[in-house]
Amino acid sequence: MRRTLSVTLAAAALTLGLAACGSKAADNAGSSDSGASPDAVLKVGVSPVPHGEILKYVKDNLAAKEGLKLDIVEFNDYVQPNAALADKNLDANYFQHVPYLQDQMQSKGYKFTALKPVHLEPLGVYSKKVKSLDAVPQGAVVAIPNDATNGGRALNLLAAKGLIKLKDGVGVKATEQDITDNPKKLQIKPLEAPQLPRSLDDVALSVINGNYAIQANLTPSKDALAIESADNNPYANIVVVRTGSENDPRVVKLEKLLHSAEVKKFIEDKYKGSVIAAF
Image (cartoon, rainbow, N blue to C red; front, side, top):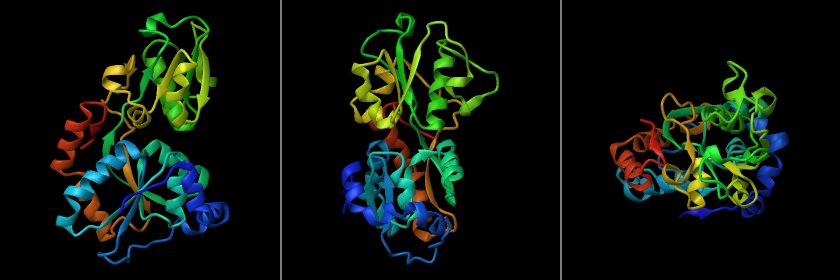
């Protein structure tokens, strides 16, 4: 059975588990449940698009042949899936890339293990105000994700397109303080990632994560004024488990299916370049 949890519903349904994360997550984060029965349901937390859609394809078309039972739990933010995994409300999650995971592990103390890359959602620059980056006016407001890794990723994309310059070698950890040249005097406005599509009515540009762009009926390969290159991109999304659970037979089966030729074709056919298989 597929259960959909919005931010509000997740808060209500997981009140006890998530409220205890501050004191309990660190204790549970390193726990191993690799001894779970191979026949038990594997509960996986996902972002609805494209992660939930990809996993639903696996559940509906491939899982039964491998004897894998999946429970897909959807989240509409980037915080609760890791908290729920640490608190054992999930067996795995599939919504994030390695730089974000590393930041969360460092800041929250989670003991997680990333598995093999599954797909890439290219970050894009969108606008309802201008038709090209050359037309961006002086002093324009540019919305970017407010989490450290995706914020740095957005700044690097803006720099790659010539709108700003960053300190040499700053890489994915770039912040606004690393901007060395801003010829258009752009005003950078960090927002929660789910809010970025809604910001398009109020800002000149919004740098939107691929999954939220698709959810908002934006097609990155068609609607974005600029898009990340997939070459050598470190932001491929992965399945994450508590350390010690990576050899759980259910997780091994899920990894096999997510990296199958059938899933690759599903990604190519459904998303047409807006989501790219990373295997």
